[in-house]
Length: 183
Image (spheres, rainbow, N blue to C red):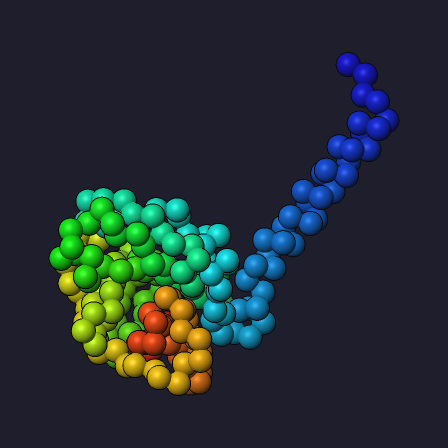
């Protein structure tokens, strides 16, 4: 088989791209966290690009709303991802408490309560955040705070809490403070 010079040049360029550009792009995805040594907030485009299109909870799969997602990237590259889900296939009783999905690769301190790495459903209901395991068993409940000064409430967002390493998880104007917890 004879390879033409133009084909050889194309193959060399493709190999160069694969060996230099792609690894640099992959490394760059976590560079902000690595430079500062602190977690970096992921916006909805970054979070939805990582999240699966649907998640499992209480015997069913539900689509995530990528436009209503957020996350954190830890300095070591581990992730905390959250997204509001379409709960239309669930019973009305479950829809009242299950509003969003939380995937965490690190332990979290949520308003003074520790949550281990895992996959969870959660919701903000009646002044509380309720976190449930994927079988819908409640495992954590903490009080939420209402923030009337929030300029642009969105369905779900994460904002720095002013304290080093602290963040606020908002659903609308209600929030809970959280941070990565020591292991």
